[in-house]
Length: 134
Image (cartoon, rainbow, N blue to C red):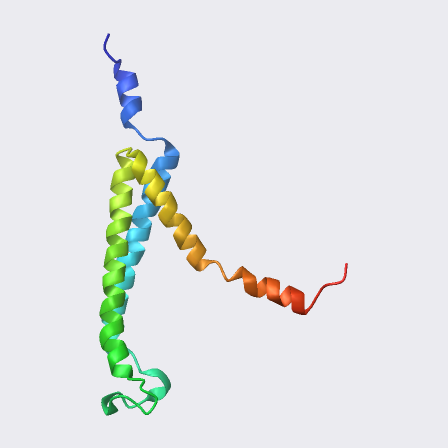
């Protein structure tokens, strides 16, 4: 017995929730790419903190703003390129119906959410310091 044309089409068309998720992954990739372009275009316009003389080298505290910019911007761009590749890879793999991609995308999404959530322990400490009545 063969598979009917409508059944075969159904097997190859992802549900709307997957199409939305894949679309949002491409939006994430686009925003990441835009961030890379903005970071690279603004690199020369970055003023060091507190208007320090960037050509003077390390200060007495050992802080060297020039080194921070020289190392920090390329490391940030490299990080963003890896993130961009992950967005695209997860979008393609999820669109193709790879089960492992759903798991990986879920784990990566949870990590991102946890990185953006403020530290709840600070809230709990403040509640102990200033108990509420009632």
